[in-house]
Image 1 (cartoon, one colour):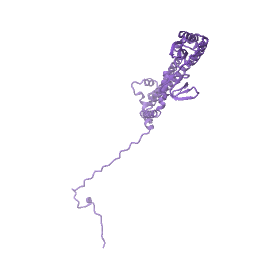
Image 2 (tube, rainbow, N blue to C red):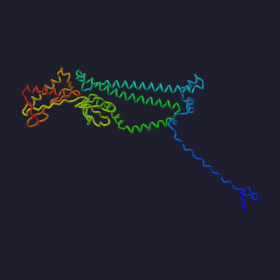
Image 3 (tube, rainbow, N blue to C red):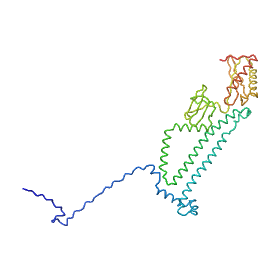
Length: 360
């Protein structure tokens, strides 16, 4: 027994189908995937394509305020005018930046030389015949400070001027500078955040130099170390203490400075004499000794900038009277002047037969 299977005919192919019953086509909805934007590289964001560069060059003469194009159009063919004006503009920007940088550098050099010359402080001018050494030290100090600040100012001026000129030239090439500036800004913030200690040292060093807080040859107390300044940079200060040890101190860590070498120094000598000594006699004796040292022309190594003063009785006890002698000297010579005063006072008291009293 055989079973025959035949395909069922489609409704529209059936001869008995009703022609009035026409199937309604189902609308087909096509889903088009939205393209995912691909990240653009910095080169694609900044560097222009040839078409953009060509349009930028051709648009050079499109502005109404352009000055170069009318001059070029009268000399060159019309098709060459935009390119020539574009090239001349770039050359003028570069030359203008170079000229401006040279002028600023010369102005900074002139200000630096004037700041390096300086004059003696008013208090020291009265003894100018003995001030060769002090004048040399002050001049060297001013020169180093002025040269350091001049180099910093020249470097900053060159970066600002040439950097601005470079951005103007890149804009003439049709480059999109917004991504570049954004990247540089982010990089600057990152570097500044990571190197904030270094930036703090540099800023502190600049203010230290501008305010002349201390210089080479000064004896200073930074809290961390005390000694003579051997070198000063924008980042560190190098000290050598009295034991010969060298200290390197970051400028950003210096919160206070005691300078023993600015303006003038004071030599101080206390003279204890017996309680029953004649006050007027001792005072006149000490005054003659101090005045003799002040007026002595052969004391070239000991520069006293003001007449010494003798105080009658600084302290008193049951066994001694203490007189005080002070003398203002150039910075750094207070110890030598004090030693010379002690020697002369000792000799004068021995000649008078007056012994030193024991201090409590």
